[in-house]
Length: 294
Image (spheres, rainbow, N blue to C red):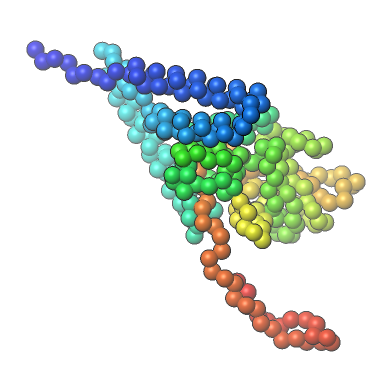
């Protein structure tokens, strides 16, 4: 009579998962308690726990039971489905305007960190310095801007999400071109709905519902290159006492259901602008003629 095939013992993986949970809880407790060097705590935690998070995020062993055959088949089917979903999500990310023509590192969200009144404010992704990820770089999904990298370990990185209390993004609103900034909708005097961001304009102009809000960019590049989709104007403030307009913004990306994301790397300008040329007209050389600019 043939001997039954031996199944892998799941106990070591369970012990590994238990250790991961305990170490994560300890690191979080030290951080919340104001222990010296919380950044160092996160860095050490990312270095030690990062490989474990990668291993555990790829699934668990089948239970060693006689009735486990059907469960194993169902689990395999579910894993195949999940891999197909992630492949489709990666294909969407590659085709997104945010990654088109830009270098990026694809990653998966493996943990949720700080959670605020409006939802998650920080997540951990399974890519780090070993993959070319650096701090202060933009993170996007197939639907638009997600946030920026705030800390990195060799295996993982922490991402501060749009809507977090300590993240503000300079933006431009179409089609008027009004400049402003987008931040947490739960902060300040104008309380927004939980899923909305707060837009504060820095100049007079017209804001309309449904208008596209994109990143402004900066002279030094900064973490956010220009033109990344941030969201759309959901509602415009009507307070006549406001010197400049304000509005609520619906984020382009679903920040509560993130899976496959991309970290933008190498976004600095590589092709210099062509010099502009023109013909002076009018008194004292006022005016400018046609020219070219990159």
